Image (cartoon, rainbow, N blue to C red; front, side, top):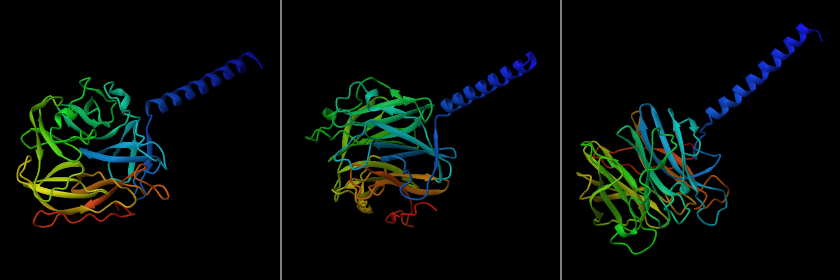
Length: 325
């Protein structure tokens, strides 16, 4: 090999090496997983549970729990997941945004249900664990990464004045009313609620509880507004169905309406999010159908459409295998 050939060979090798390094850097920088939904369950490459969602612009952001594997005999949940879509067909999964170990005050190691929301240019994710309480994490972007916002629980069992069991302080759901007031709902066995201060990391005033005729509350409260009505949906009974009630004010009084969603197949639990996205309403939930003979501890998120009647009541959700067309 002559001198000129050696120079050319060295240039090609360096160019190839540079391209390889750039490609690796791009993979690390864009460390996301893109996939297409083929129906229900929406996510098939891992087990997901306890969905929550919000819409920002033309994007729906989906936040879920993470059942670690199939054929589980109990809950093994160490972190949470975040996904986004602009069409409910093509999805992006982002790197793990939050782990239960990020909350040093937790003593359970179980990443239970939560909900995220945007406020004051930040994103706040309210989470629960199996007995240590409800925490709040904050991020600059919806996909995170999130960090513990206050270094301690926002709420504990001590705030759940009408309960006696250890796992009552779970399943936080946040709602911001049209006047800007933020509210937090949560509970197992008893449904609690309280105002949030404008900083979103402190309770404003006392903790209250919801009660009304026909209210058989298990867990998983979710509040949304449609026209002039406030809707409180929740898991009822065990195995869990989803029921709902309606009020003219966010803090009630609520009036029981009916069952919204039946028991979700082979999952003893259910957990819903209800959101409007591009002019249509959707019911997001989980079931146990991803694996053969699935169970309540290896769950998967599904999405079906939600429809209102002319009087403001909601038609019972039809759970489908096909999912959103």
